[in-house]
Amino acid sequence: MTHGTDERSTDERSTDERSTDERSTDERETVVLESPADGVPDVITTPEALAAASAALAAGTGPVAIDTERAQGFRYSGRAYLIQLRREGAGTVLLDPIPFQPESGPADLSELAGLLAGDEWILHAATQDLPCLAEVKLLPTTLFDTELAARLVGLPRVALGTLIEEAFGLTLRKEHSAADWSRRPLPPDWLNYAALDVELLIELRAWLVEKLEAAGKIEWARQEFAHLVERACVVPPPRQDPWRRTSGLHAVHSSRALAVVREFWQVRDELASGMDRAPSKILPDRAITGLAARLNNPEVKRLTASDLSAVPEFAWRAPARYRARWLAALDRVAALTRDQLPPRQLAQEGPPPTRNWEQRNPEAAARWDAVRPAVVALAEQLELPVENLISPDALRRVLWQPPQPLTADSLHVALAAELARPWQRDLVIPVMLTQLT
Image (tube, rainbow, N blue to C red):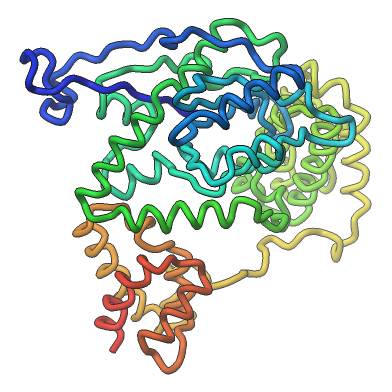
């Protein structure tokens, strides 16, 4: 979710109006921001209204604040059900992309994106919003991520509400953050909440820019934001065996029990996808793993309808509708031959966990034990999270199999292949060379 902020007065005025930079969060009282200063705008649902709003945004000045509302936890897809934009001179726009969807797919908002091309877009936790914005072809060419900026300047808490309190002593209500935004019509109080998401985000950007410049980290931020823009349209490859992420899988001990999880996960996924409902609304994970775990008993050779009935969740209204599907899934699992069962563990892609390096590759373990503490110490010195200094996975991969010969240039190439940005490489490589040569 994105929330904005408001400027506080300076210490030239009364003591009660001192700048928030001079007062700790504990010293000042926060003020709840109840409603947008300009009121809640009408939701854009027609081509005519979209054209007028797009023209107003294009004619505005300065960066564009943007946020989305999704219905995760209610819907199968991660699509945007409301898009909020705000710009100086244009005010706030609440855009419902659903009326603009053709039957064959998502809305196409590339015309609006074109009007704002070259303008900086402000998002909070951009990686959460960029996928659904990419789906409707509404992507920035330049952005500023307030969450990432806060990490880079070393702020200990980077949630939007926390940042706003820290910067401006304002509190934003969060009662609708987990709402079902696919609901129509959207209630007025939800729209008020959504408008406040971008009401003061531009001011938060300005506050963070000052901190980045004071810390000498503005170039780091530029490179990070450019990386986000570059990767915004990159679709990650499908996850191998996504069913292995089912909660409670640690309690499933046999390959045939894993086959139950796989089969039930796939049936549930087909149902959820077809109905655009969150899988958990069809059947909770614990029901799947609870059923599969019944095969942990060596005396149980196959699961039957009585086992299904023994798991309480299968009697709930939604799962009970599909009892025939669940029983058919049990039959399919029972018919699997041993070679058709899933392996207990997937083949490792990339380096193994570092806890296993001592046995698997003692030289790599020694490199890790030397470099990792030095990188952590550097991150502490620079006042930023170590994962923002260098991706842990990138560090693991390069230390597991470092380039030869080991030089600054070869490490630059190796880390660049792992998508480390230039500023990260410039800081980390000297530390790596010190520890490894």
